[in-house]
Length: 334
Image (cartoon, rainbow, N blue to C red; front, side, top):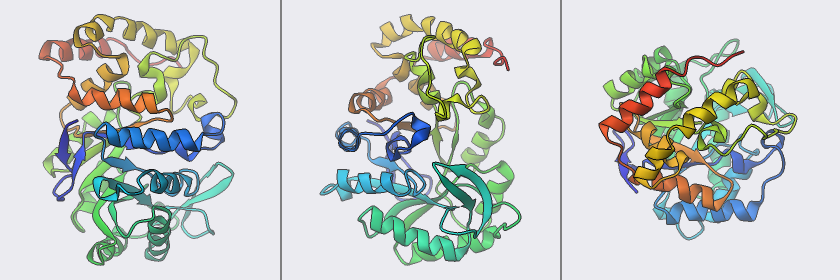
């Protein structure tokens, strides 16, 4: 495993982190999760050298955080715990966001709700400090808490020792600049993959300029880029991956093109003695500005596989070939 600093903080994180959204469970994942297997998966990640565990209260309404607490019992000092604030469902404070897993979620970055959230996360994670505390989504109208107020609340938590570093997620370049104007930010977490490269235009150069670590999610496009979702795969009704807005390449009319693309890289996998998932993650980590990739898993053998991607070094020729293939892919059909 390789390790890099989280921005200007004194925290050093594995370049592959564990994304704990899926283990929170819920109907969006097409069925219930196995808590014992989830714990085994987290422990396998730690054994493979992964030390960054990224979760959030909204992942199963605290269930993901509580599973992590059980999994790391006795190993707390070996782990960087990253969780989030800003998605609120207790009452109508904040601005309405969405319905998710049977609850009405609001975006709230008010100091009073942040104060409640951090204490809840500390309890659910069974810890006295959170290593990386992240704004999950930016505040929006009608109750758009000023960034200065949000950052003041987070900086206060840092001064109190409840959090060690501050991160943000899902910001626009303009929003990121505003957060940076009010205090030190260590990380920015956002969606990035071979099939979702919009951050290359502005976000990645901006993160490089300010020495921010980048935590990318959905870099395997919910399993599509592993090659294991064939044309015969049928998703359950209501499953998150059926969203055409989020995953147009998973639609049957587009999936064949991705499977053909991946099939063309099998000789690269043979050369590097790796799987398609490992090849894709190695390419992702090699992109300018990308420092860390979050990989979700519900099975222990999957996280063992993805952790090994950190050790794959692709040549310039390999990287150019893959990028050229992606450029000729074109856009997904509607």
